[in-house]
Image (tube, rainbow, N blue to C red):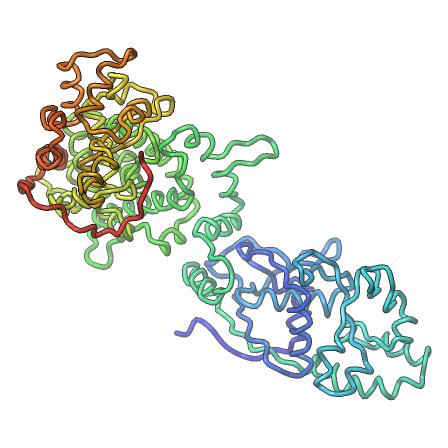
Length: 617
């Protein structure tokens, strides 16, 4: 069955319904004012009976309920509570502009050719309009809110239409009288009967074009689902800024009296803190969580609950609800589901933050995937404090690191996070269950290490954290990286064999820029390294008055970075590269719980990522 009808409706009828409040706007429609040039061009098109495009309306009374508002400029009389019969999905700017110009007496809020906000009233110069269609562009004029047109930088008045008598004298017709000109006509007859014959010619030529103008209207029926309405809206509004699912959900919940925006962002008036500031802002790893990502988590929880209920009820096949965080399912999330799960999911994110910090993550710039936090947080909701049990924590950690080092969350993730929630919970609760798909599908090729060169890669960030987590100590401060103030010591990832030294030895950037030749180092240590050979900078660091360590102590520090001290002191880059690559692969294998083929002495692969260069030294 078709969910829409198409017809033609008189422009005058459409605008009448707008000012009566029978046609309104869903609140997710952004307010936007056409500039003066667009408005005058629109008026010319109608005057010449040119098409101005169709309008799409949604019949109210169906399941797609939104908070609504009147079209800009429309004010209902005191005591009048209009019931909207249709909502504008496409054609807002045209209908708003025409309503303000043709139906309202107040000046139109618009912008001039320099983008400045101005107030304008529109007129048609009758004499120019009667010279032919080609003159209509010049015949339609705009004056300021004082009904004057000025020149010479506003010092001189070129046209004064400040009273109806002056309109008659200038023979300029006000556009807000186009659809009903009886009062203006009577006034003209009394003021200057000699002009009346020409006016009647103008009415026939121009005004009737407006009065007889029909607009193609596509009417979506009230049976149209909310998801379909939102999808259609975005398809037809290609010229505007795409709406986020959060904005659409906000408009939906507002129809039921719930302010989603206040719940997330808070309300300055009254100093009401929102969920984001109250719970997430102070957590470095959570401060960038977006409201849309929070809604994805809620959708996972809601659809997973429904799926479990369907299975218990004996449903099979397509009868069983699919676990999903896709856009259409977020838009179908009922308000009662939001209220049921929001606080639980908030706690789930806080537990996810706790888990990540225990795994060694502290700085958001080294967080591999923010999107992987969504299934992690939803899993925490169902597992609760049980995730701290060693067996469960080990499983969650293995799943997480397989996602990071296997780079499983780099593309579209809606399907993956839905599968991961189900698989991970099954794996945790049932010792006989198969491993999650992210664990099964994750792999790490030895050649991948050669191409990891910047922190744009999730695996690169993950390896950086693994090196710190296993106890790597700073070359200068001698303390463990995890115990140092990362900001105060300016810890970052830097070259072990310096770039300048490598270049003098003829080593290519695609080789020496690999993570195999990088490790976490403080700013102090990196400054002392400079561009020197390792054999020289190691001595300089060891003999520095602020450091003063023995060669044996320095060897232990180097080993904490899985660096063979003897190869570094021998300035043997090739042997160092091969040995450290194998050591890193051993760490990766142990973390993922997967065997990795020996790296051997294979040559570094070409950069398959084509990653941008990043200054890290």
